[in-house]
Image 1 (cartoon, rainbow, N blue to C red):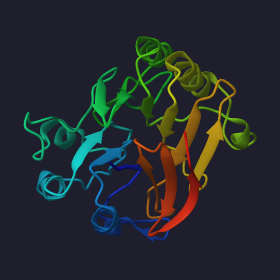
Image 2: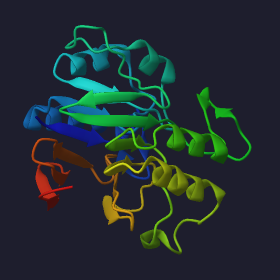
Image 3: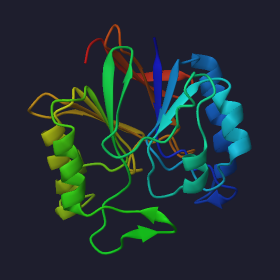
Image 4: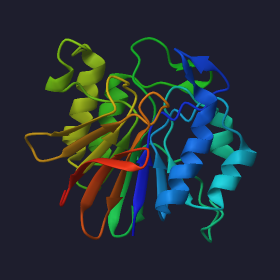
Length: 239
């Protein structure tokens, strides 16, 4: 069994910072066809060009789970369901929801943290205490935690602030204590792999056209890989 994890696809019909974001969808179809995973997980920020017709073409190829980030066509994500499963499983996971794949339990916390706004462009945001509360609800119940937000870690020193928001993400992860936590949101580098002192392995990936990275992992063997396009850039035998 094989799962693929993407984040921040940013599929949009525009050129941003010299990068053609409209190429993101065909890139995604290409890596799905190459790896043929049983499950594709998105950590959010599909982009605003995402639409039901193209999503259903993808869903004919692979089962999809997703959380939302802060750049979405959220109504589309809410309306779409898996066609390769018997129970019309929604692709969008709810906050605190737990799903199982290949014997592992996956928990979800959607969106980003904001101190003032409750939403932007129809996409909800969370207060720090809300984010932490979902981490507590998942405590001891999940093997893998799916987030869009990223915590502050030492590698980000001097680049992003260690503030109430990033600290809340770190606390939520500590409360949940998963074996793995996958995050996105930051575009500082193609990916980061970091192990917390309490044993949780943190993986942040950027699947935008800027970096084109994603993770592939094998639940049965506990093997984890990070890929850029069609090349492995990082791998570990066990997580």
